[in-house]
Amino acid sequence: MIHVRRLTKVYKDLHLGDFVALNQLSFDALAGQIYGLLGPNGAGKTTALRILSTVLSPTHGTAIINGLDVTKNPEEVRQQIGFVSTNTAVYDRMTGWEMVEYFGRLNGMDDERLTDQMEFIFERFQMKNLKDVLGSKMSTGMKQKVSIARAMIHDPPVLIFDEATSGLDVMVAREVLKTIAQLRDQGKCIIFSTHIMREAEKLCDRIGVVNKGKLLAEGSKRDLMEEFQEDDLEELFFRLIEQHEKSAASLNGVEGQSNMEGVHGS
Image 1 (cartoon, rainbow, N blue to C red):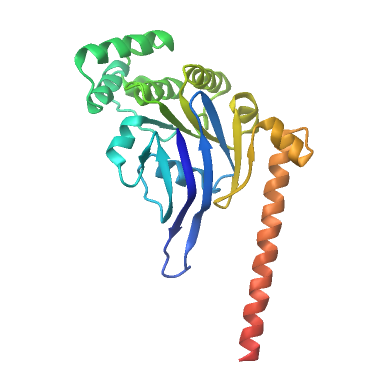
Image 2: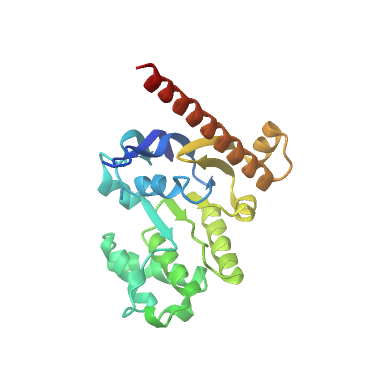
């Protein structure tokens, strides 16, 4: 369903030089599966998901969603995906029903299909109380529910959640996670980015740990525990990140020493 190969994103900076946000990232995510992309803030998770969502273009590498290349077929890819983050805006002067309806029309849905799908979503995810509530009157949790509803209104096979529970209170976050699990059970392919280990443990079928744009490890929770001889996902996560940070620092030190030797020798 999603096939990412050697995905690389480099930002040019005239003063600081190249910044590598993604470094040859590769992974696969399948239908009926939640793939957890785990990493600290600044690890490159959002960059990867924005490329998958066609918001950014990669510097190198490929990303294929449901047989479509995100770079060559961006419009078709957008029909295949729904994207949710904590930064998704909700329009203050539109009701919950109007916002979801608007996004359905943007996706080219006819009136009959749109109405049926909206009724199904508002019933299934207990959102009937949001039908007539203006965006300006919604709580954070209400807004997030509407964001999820409008992301899935056109029934896309792929859903992308970028830190979707960040900033939410415990009860609202619980409801969001419950909704994501229900979508997985419907056969959706879901990419779930988070830095909260408890969420990953509870939800994810496969996990990829990312730091500084590089995939450090990947597999099911059980496989990762066996491979690294850890019985706690959080401890495994911190161990991988610390090892990578030390390795990067050591490499930078060697490069810096080499550069200094070159200067003294010239």
